[in-house]
Amino acid sequence: MKKTVVSLSLSAVAAAALLAAVPASAVNVKVESFQKAESPWDMAFLPDGTMFYTEKCGGLSVRTASGSVNKLLGVGGSSGYAKTKGDLFCDGQAGVLGVAVDPDFKSNSYIYLMSSSRGDNRTYGGYNNIVMRMKVNGSLSDVSDIKEIINDLGYKPKKSNHPFGGPGAHNGGRIRFSPADGFLYVTIGDNHSGEGPQHPTQLRGKVLRVDRDGNAAPGNNPPSGFDKRVFTYGHRNPQGITFRPGTNEPFTSENGPWHSDEVTKLVNGGNGGWDPRGEVNGRPACPDAYCGYSPNQMGALPPKERAAFMPMTDLKAYPKAMKPAWNNNGLSQGMCGSAWLVGKQWKDWEGHLAVGYAGIGIHGTPTGNRIDVLDISKDGMSSKREELSWPGVAGRFRHLTTGPDGALYVGDEAANMIYRVTPE
Image 1: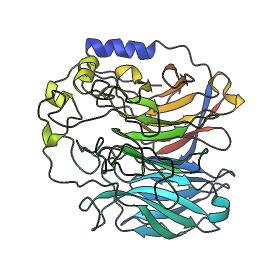
Image 2: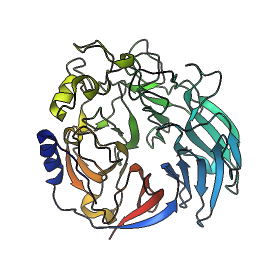
Image 3: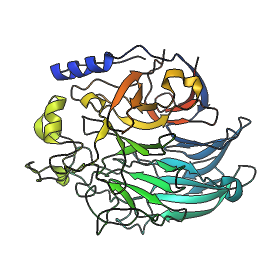
């Protein structure tokens, strides 16, 4: 896979060398263009191969098992969709995000969608992220009974003094049903809110576990005083959640603050250890009280110094925080969604976790543009990494998922394409 490296510091060179020094790919793969899609953000399958997918600035569509495409629900002002919802919008990372299929779809025809909304009566002042449940008709050509089951995932964009402010920031946005308990897990980023990730009732920087109506799942164990829907908290921008085959343990994949992208095994009630508040833990004041980008305050530091100033998992402040299985060798390169490779056809990679990167490279960090394959230890505390060799493609990957055929499906924002990847 093509890599671009520009103006690296010595520490970044060393980190890049660590990433490069991996065993040769254990599995050769075949990459096929599967479905053209503008900024594809998520994919979810029915057993017959029907694929629901989202385009961040367009909406929700479905590719049927025969290969035909129906546009189901679009953002306000979009055309060609069976329905549009005027409050849905797109800005930066905000837009039409996660999609999930109900485990009982065959009997209830429900799918679930997470999107950004500019509704007028949102809890946090006009802009929000919402989760909707809707019914798909028998011909997969239209949706009905659209109901917002969660509409307080919000943020309030405003005139910002922060160099990275705005409504497009850190929305998380992945939704998945656990095969173990049948509940819906929802990832929400911090939305550039300093207080959100550690706040007991704001839902920014959280992973929720809810039922089909958006209510707290029985057995959630957040700290006293927390919203009962919270499964874990203290997150920055978890853009992936997936469940380990065999154990069904949830793992997130998450963007770091210009260092330390993380894959983490979640523990019910656990703290991810992210706390970007200004003027805490010895930090100086930060723009808009959000210290989520250490170079803003400290210059273009090497990754180790950045991590000391603004830890992704702050074990000094939160000694019991969930420790990551993988931290991308201390680099942040836009880690996105992840998927477990299932089936004997994957040979040595069967049961390993594939995780993609959007290719961000800034302040001396080399760009990613790749897919890692992680052999995660049984306890979820460590990993061994190989790189999936992807000849001729330098993508900006936004999500990975496995289909019912055992193939890996990859959404590439740069190519406006969903690829199908299979072992040769």
